[in-house]
Length: 117
Image 1 (cartoon, rainbow, N blue to C red):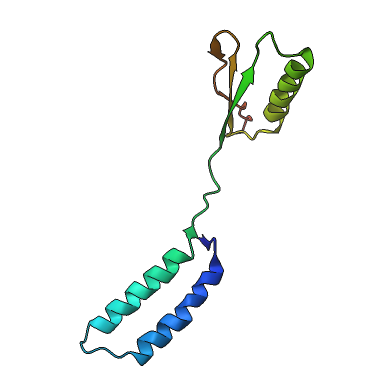
Image 2: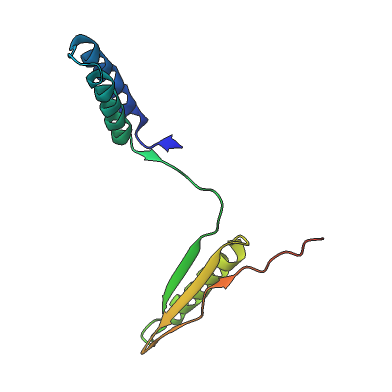
């Protein structure tokens, strides 16, 4: 887990000082305020959890209308070929082409590598 804005964790210092200086009557009120301040400071620091397993999905939308120059069609095909050559085994790529009507070429998985058993 990481924080997207960890500098805001420094807000815990004035919160703790405020808690120390402003004593409140009651047995459970002080721990409750401490928990609320901690939750508030943690939420402001924007916690994030990055999961590194699993593949991604890329969907390419390609314009194939007759009004496009031939160079644009070649660039689209080169981009799709580049994406296919650089994907990992768990990634999927889908292509949606459109001209007068849209059509799809499905999401394909990269071929699995053979493993010995």
